[in-house]
Length: 440
Image 1 (cartoon, rainbow, N blue to C red):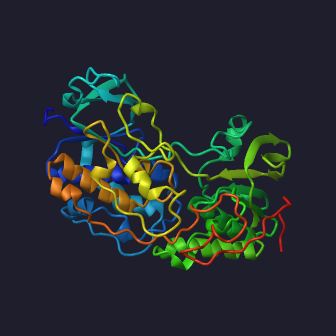
Image 2: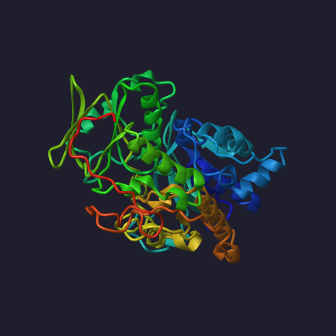
Image 3: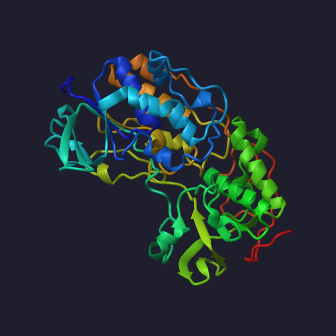
């Protein structure tokens, strides 16, 4: 392999920029390809949302070392918004990397030079070919000694349909649905109307809390929170058992909003059909229940886009679509709570030598990814590419206890086994059978 060829990093998000910083320190040539028109384009779309990670958990060590040479000072403790994360760290790191980051450069395919997926002969000795479709101009190809895919999952949100496919009619009314957390501070349409939030993860909780604040100010505002599980205790997270206090506080505040009658919780609601009429958007569950709302926010998680990797030999878990050794650590069907081990180059490797998936995409469909995890991944991967195998094997991160229970147990359980067990007391909730939002 020609060592003069660059490492191609796909995505200029937090992990992609961190990978670039580590490659810079190691003296390895690289190119970062970003589909968006600016760095961290995904974070820009949720710039109004406050993170539950502290500043100390959001800055990569190599990135900080590079920025320190410019007089940059690390932000103080606290929990920034996405916008503050960008202005206080990410954008400055991207600026420092300069023209080694290419914007408006969408990767549409990765393969081996002269070798499709079927060919064994000399495969590992051939450079990668990375096909790029720019915003302007013709498609072109780059040769690379290695590829780090840090493209994330933001562009591939899960649908409202409970079976993993878009619900019947969902594609027809997609313009009436939001798959991101809206900035409700600047959107007056939510006050006085009825909004349904579909989903039970931290994004859904964040949206529910923002709507609850509006409902507190304007009693005419109705908020319905639709979750698929019969017992919704796990939607409230680990509460005070979570070692990330801001994340645990989300669940505590969500339960308070439900108890106060600001939010109506509908459990066991598995969307089968979506329609729109003069009344608004209609969600119909598999059991026939209906929710009619002015607006619907679908926050059911994300999934990796593997389409442009079809010519590579990947070893992915059949359930999570994550590297198999990573999936064993993060599978929510197996792990109900506690810490998740840090993962490095050995865990992220594939049968295709020199190719690594890092960041949120490395977790596939699992929802528990933290920025710290990605920073440790790229540190290890770049060390491996530099031939520093000892550093690649070394673990330099201890993750906080998640305090999140809810993966293990029966999907249809009605007792408290899902919503607490080993991490936090279970929240006892009575599944709602009526659909009309109420204010207590």
